[in-house]
Image (cartoon, rainbow over all chains, first blue to last red; front, side):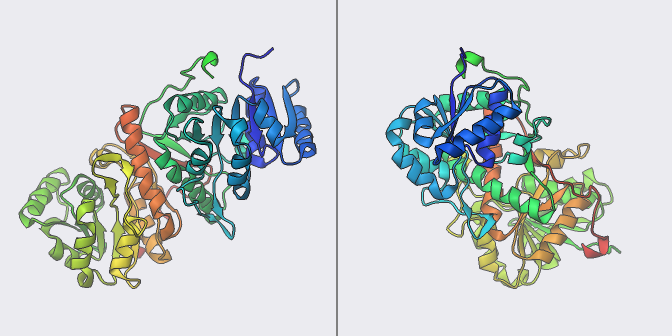
Length: 232
Length: 232
């Protein structure tokens, strides 16, 4: 029995999605990895269970994962972003959606290429409708840091969206895996936070780095979770 | 005699412009404060000389300042951004222009409100033409940190623009006053870097902070100037 909400990760076989799944699994959240190919999802789940023995972690199709999750993380490649949300719209209704997708120019990953809605997060919010809270977060956390469990990622999480309570829950979920997370404002700010990922990718290329990130300075925020597990 | 280039700061009576002027004056750059009102410019220059005795620091009209500067910092309120650049276009030709202006929604300073060009920096580059290099930088450095000379600002400088050599000079100018500065990519990234300022203002308001900033993590960059003074 687990009092923590089940987190489904659509596109959870990818680097970013599987990294987040790993982190949450390690602190006891039940996780469902979703993929277009259920077999690949099962394979990824098995691999992650090898890293975190005893984790509640299974693999299913994206639709089955979306149905099981109380919290649903959208971590698909941007090409499939709008179509998966449209096809799962009814299943996702009223759940907490965390969008981590960054639309990049396919011919130049240093370049942010937002859709007409202004950002992937805004696109998701429009498709799912105002009753389903969509929160953008984790865009700036390199998958390299997520997969190295010995490391406390030296990067903060900027959380954006128009649903205040949903943002508070996402901040708590980020804090639960060791991040300092900030309410970075309304949905209109999602383009800035997503776009920052393109800037960081450019820095990695230009300065031969791996996993560039950002830290917020100059404001004090409690270093420890400000939310109880029951609020997650 | 001073081998360092003269830096003119248009709108140098404002908080951000005067803070940058103060920092550069302290390390020996000759500075011209520009203002629509030359009397105000002289007054600000006198005040700053009181903080940095012996500084080469004078106040003039914006047009006179632009004529004297080899490097020209644009730090006017956004309302006057396009018009001052249009009126001084010929004087500014072929100089190094550093644009620090952030277009914010007048009714909500937490909201980035870019012009049709996409960013203030892109607007400046369009107005001044491709022969005059425009570099966006320093947007994310709070004036509070600049004016407190006892402090080494805990914030990095993201430098954007399409002129590579101009960016290298601006990085050197930022390093000369103690910042770690990064080439954050092309002019197209200016909206992200400018917009980040709106996110930081929102964090200050939401978390009751003063002078929120960012640090880049995860990549190593020399902590000391990589450019000689002669390249400034």
